[in-house]
Each structure stands twice: as C-alpha cells, then as structure tokens.
Length: 92
Image (tube, helix red, strand yellow):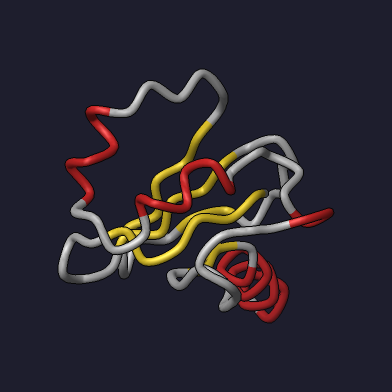
C-alpha cells in the first residue's frame, strides 16, 4: 500500500497546473523556439492565436490546466490566464 502512495505522488509531481514564472516572452539565447516574434500576442485574447499562422509545434496552457513538464526546446508554449488573455510565451 505504501508503494502505491509513493507512485501516485511521483505521477502527480510530473504534472503542474501553473506555467513557470518568467518574462513575458523569451529573448536572446533563451529563445530556442523563435517565440520572440510572437511577443506582440502577450495581452491579446486567446482567440488571436486563431489568426496567426505558426508553422511549428505549439502548446496552449490554460490557467488551472494540468500539463506534463517535458521540455521540447523548439516548442512554443502560450500561457493563457483565467481571463482568456495570453499572459506569457515561452520555449519548452
């Protein structure tokens, strides 16, 4: 029984519901996914993403949503706040 508790804790630890804090969008060497060109989307409603052709892997992370913490340096992540606004763009 004790082993199952540990396994459940480890599985839950692999997920998070809040994207890590940081700048609104990456710059310089941190921009491994070329996300800086989409920096103007920060503060826009999430529906703005429907109008922008992005020809690379993306992930949309909504407030309160669980997601895996796997890192894909070329992937662009769009964090969406509870008010449906794009709050942050980051690589990974």
